[in-house]
Amino acid sequence: MPNGLEITQRAIEDFTKVQENMALAKEENATKTYANLKKDYISLKALLTVAGVNLTELDKIKE
Image 1 (cartoon, rainbow, N blue to C red):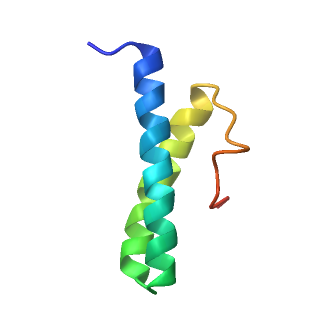
Image 2 (cartoon, one colour):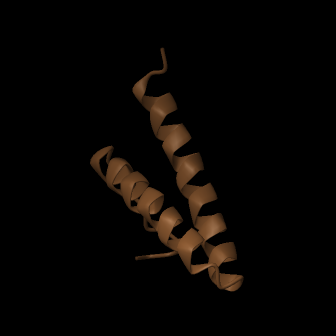
């Protein structure tokens, strides 16, 4: 069973991937894909905020 640090690390990795995919979707004008990814972005951002992760450097989208 993963510990808190492993869960946080995985969430950070997922957050980064979601942001990369959001940027690609925006570039390709894929609005439905972007909207779907934004849901994941918001959830991960909330989880990381509750976990006490400083998102200043990690958050490239800033929505």
